[in-house]
Image (cartoon, rainbow, N blue to C red; front, side, top):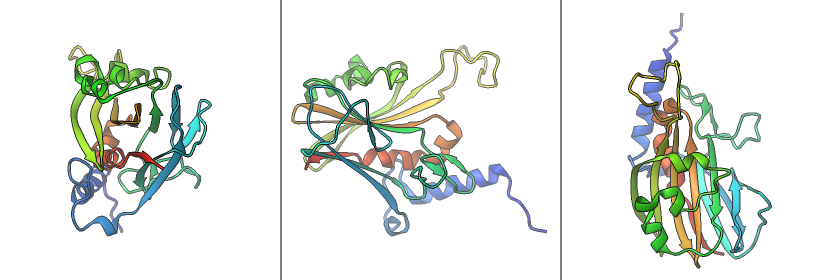
Length: 231
């Protein structure tokens, strides 16, 4: 009779596979590039004085396509694109079988910006420095900074932050550990850059700590592939 692996065994196997493929920063380990395929998301905008917003590859909130700037990122091909009957980012891999990512938001902040604003992120708050849209990313304003770094891609500097937010209360649920606070339940991976005095940012969200343990390297890679360049 065939044996059925326990869910914990499946989770461990998936986590081991992830660690074999990815470095901690989300970059692919040498020699595995050809084994993993990715889906490219690309769209074009024109600079604007107003907020521009794209959710999961679709312009929203009156944001219009343009021709002057090319914005792009990648996510694993095995994650659903939402057109095959599964929710977008659904990963059918054994041990996961769930959405690997809650949402991917790309925005251009309203008004003029410069790198000095990004450099102040740890002092004034990342959400404030990145001028994150409050209607769509309100929890980001209460999130804690877990880590941050500056990455150079081509001539552009990208200011990257890992952030996490906890609910205001968790009542009598199992998440209330009696510690006087609730554990994190939403992780945000941000990367922001300034091009021609405009601030552009990607926010990759995960709202499941179990999935985070499995897919953190891949989620970080999505963030690391974000680029903004003149078209």
